[in-house]
Amino acid sequence: MKVWLGAIVQQWQHVMEPVDNQLIDQIKNTRHYYTHRTHKRSQDAARGFLLIQHTYFLQALYSLELLRLLRMPSEQITALVANNYNLRGKLNRRCFPGA
Image: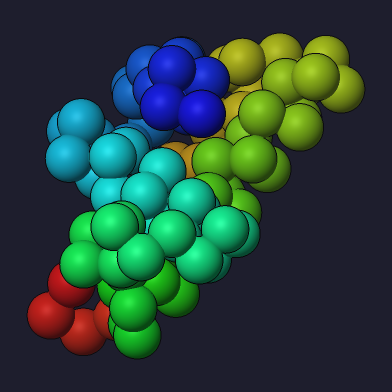
């Protein structure tokens, strides 16, 4: 999952603030924890607002990927992000005050 998610993030890095490996690792560990209840990853799993923020980030990222798979030109997707405050906020993980 880490490689797959990293590849998608890298493809869309020009429309969002930088994403470090720590964020990708935390998303991966959170998914493993909540899917398999792996207790060794419980301390690394996101909770509360951070979990919601990761969920919004993935939702926005998957939306971009879906538009690409539907063959929307990359320039139009980039313009969509630039003109959509909500989508930009999700991609930049700024959905909540203080984020």
